Length: 403
Image (tube, rainbow, N blue to C red; front, side):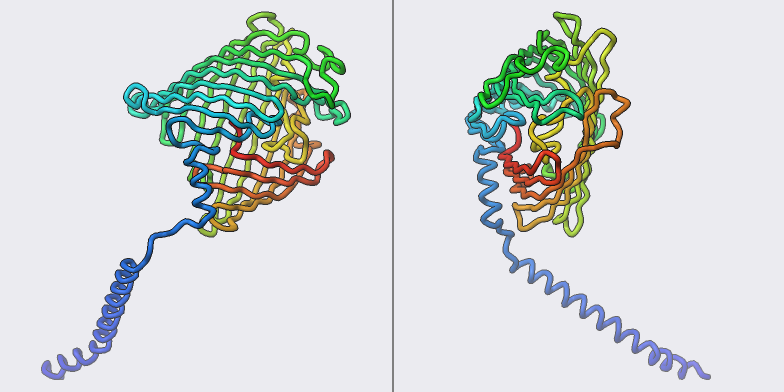
């Protein structure tokens, strides 16, 4: 076939492909123009009423504070304190903004009170190092005590009063973007006496040194601390990532040489989200084993506890207490609308008198449902209803977390 015939035939064969390419380019141009027109006409996202209200509560000083100056402080001083109120002062502009000062005091409707002063240096070494010094005084007049171990009885409930003051300093080094290691030193002065709840028997009427170690005398302690922390949560009110911390503390009895011990606290939390982060699965494992040398005892008021709004939610505050403790929690959170999540949860755990018994046998458990009013920086209000335990049903309303 001659060349002058081949060339027209080739061009004719390529014509459909050229037509398709032109049509595709035309569609792409039209789609690009539509996107540009949509970007020009779209309005910025407007937070709903609940989001605006929670953000106002947070930035206005109740209860999650982000601003400097005088602020109100509402929430809880400690587990079992009830609703607490107070005020504080914060400044992040000390020493040319190289340090931050935070001083606050508060009291609860049950007569609990606490005050704290803290100075932080968060950006030493170009942000690689953090140091802080602090002092705290507190009085908790109606702390619950049911005895020691997993077999303690609800009918054996008594109450005690605990006063304490703490002075300490800590430092940490960021060894990776999400990894910090550090340590500290504290001087701790606890004092324990009979409680003030007239509806309960005071601890001294029902327990003695054998059943409540440390009741007869309380020494002052020098506490040395070492810790490692990994924090990859995003955002702070986490929907993905994790928070893992291990802290080793040695309590050195400075007065009586009878109550020295070492305690390890491990807390591991993982968050997994899906469906555009509107659904979150949270898992937590926390363990607190301890070690006491021959001739020494661990005071009951420094033993780990289970029960209350942040551990076994189906049990009363401090329902179980022992030298060793294990807690496992799972929670499924789902967004109802921006600023409000619902949740289903399951808690299980135990305390043990021997470290060898800190296993998965004979665990206490509960389950329940709750709601979380939140912003990206944290939960503003949490409501949990817990069921399924041998301690009955419990409703927890936690406003702003702990002080």
